[in-house]
Image (cartoon, rainbow, N blue to C red; front, top):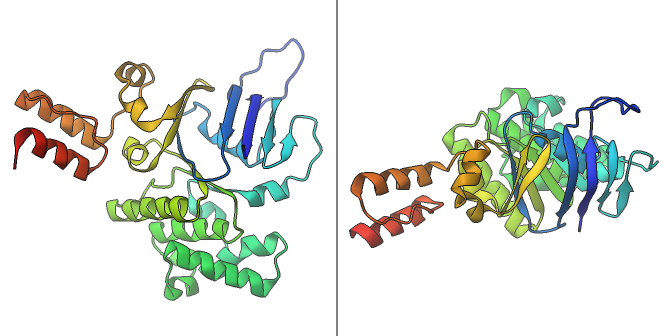
Length: 287
């Protein structure tokens, strides 16, 4: 396993004897493969999602327990070099403008590989390759990252991480603030990276539509603990669990449920794309 959590807890306060401490994540046991996983992490605000992914790329170190990250063991007392881990596990923050700062988009993408010791010419080539992978034009690469659209900024931030060739790519709320077209394009890009490059991708999202479209596996956090870790479709069929943990249904499933109630017909509501929903409605209602 590429990432292996063993009884990991993290507190933003220092642990002190005989003093009760609030943990942002508590007693987490979790295994994530190096390739081909597409995981969505969901849960209400404050459930521990961002803390969990920052532990995955060693921005945070466990208060208790230990994590193996691609062969390196991290615990509260381990003295290890963390920079190589951050190259192997790339993290794109929720607001890409927080990690963009160079005068052109190309320079921003090049910064990552140069920071990890790659010679300038090679770093530029890796930046260009990453830019092509995410669909950035030469015109965009010449512009300031602050003079382009939100969707393009998100692509520049992703390209900046991909240029360092991480084994695992983590994105915090990647579709927030994007219009429907930008959201669709970004999800297609992430699916392509997952399927063609075989990289494990982990996203934090509140958008259950995003979960239904791209996730193979879902991790649900509630009150700092993992309460679900499993198949996406199995999650959406567990009505009681969704209600108990304040999780919503994807829009297509809501529509199918509404049609079933209004028309009084036996429709299978568990459809996860417009195409699947159309086929089910055609089966039941005819053309």
